[in-house]
Length: 322
Image 1 (cartoon, rainbow, N blue to C red):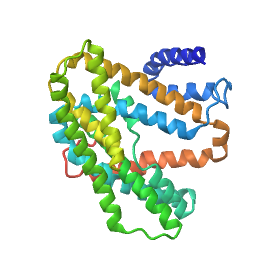
Image 2: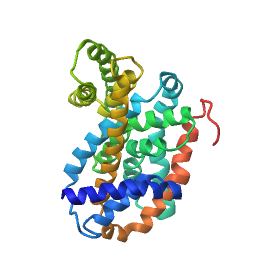
Image 3: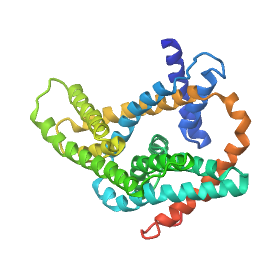
Image 4: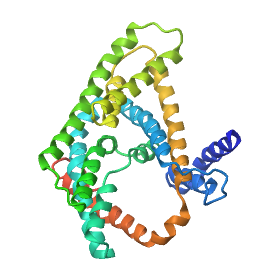
């Protein structure tokens, strides 16, 4: 198994050169490699444990989001927070509704099924966003908006999905409880990130550790602690992690430069491993039955639903059409 893992990592590393020449995100090739090595491809690695994949993905995502927050500058957050918050809440709803209606009218899907699909895929994927922006020359304001939005849109998407499922099952959901749950997840998530991000530099500067590697370990433990605490309080752990990284990254503490390099390297490994694993989880033969509907939904999402949501949710802030 270690030999197979080494081969996958080597191929993933070399594939980044191909991705750069073709002008496509490396994560696409990482997914493809996982699918080729998986059960429906060469059948070298059999992996179909979705629960384990979710747990591993969460661990990778914690590091990816923390590193993204760590490298976000304070002035960019002040500029991008309001539009990002608008996209992460209203934008998710508009995306889901627009996608559902267009899917129902164009593809002919059942209206309830259309709304469920819309709710599930209405939020952007943080790992993909951070991976794409890593090697692209995107305007800093737009990049910060995308990163903050992708880190904070999960609560809205989850609540929207649960609401649609309850509606389909005939279970009436109290609108006030939905709003309260959303507010709790976002506010407490940010608060935990703020507290740990502010206390972290004080702890790091006071404690005296033997080597620089232990400082990185300490920062990493703060990263996972913020997520775990948020999850225990039923808040948004990913949002807590992002803001912990943000406040730590904008503070001064010993061995910060070394920690920053180590965090960037670890995040890169997490990106590669995450998308290789997700590729292994895909069974292409199972997709063939519904590939036409899937492609049409992807096109509707890309060229209709999401652009409508983005333009409506950024009207009050100065963004160019581009």
